[in-house]
Length: 188
Image (cartoon, rainbow, N blue to C red; front, top):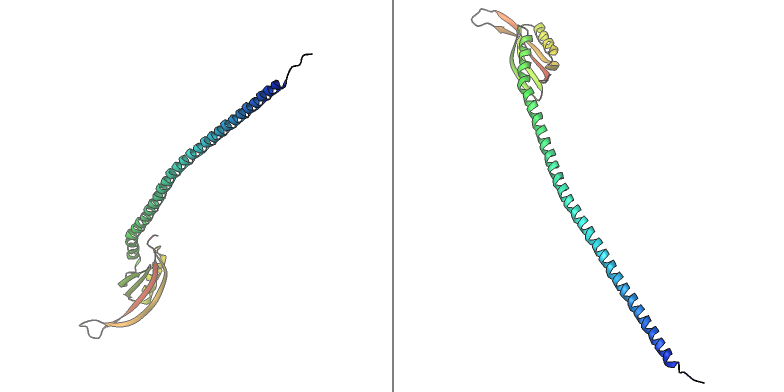
């Protein structure tokens, strides 16, 4: 019988198996390293894209802030112009209102009433004058109440006094001195 030594064949097979296992391990390790590098690159690209998006959004935000600043400036300018227009309107009313009120007063004042003093303070007028009798003072007050420019007409006082003519012998006339206060509205 012939005997064959199979021991070296086993060692060779074992070596081949170990080599195959090492090659497989190296391949798995290479695949793992390549996978990690690929995953890292993919995440790095994702971070770069998000950074680009963030920088684009920041640029857009800066532009919007600039636009908001321009809108706020426009709004404040608009408000200033509206205030100026309101002042101009008030000045126009203040310019023509007193003329119309005095014209109305001149057309309605009774013939036997004389205004000696007229004073305006804070939308209130005070008339001081003289009249031949109390009916004339009353007619003047009614004329003021009838006017659209004057309101809250009130008689402060009405006094009677005698006036002597110069150079005449003893002739005297009775005159009534009065003060009337009222509110005035030039915008009517």
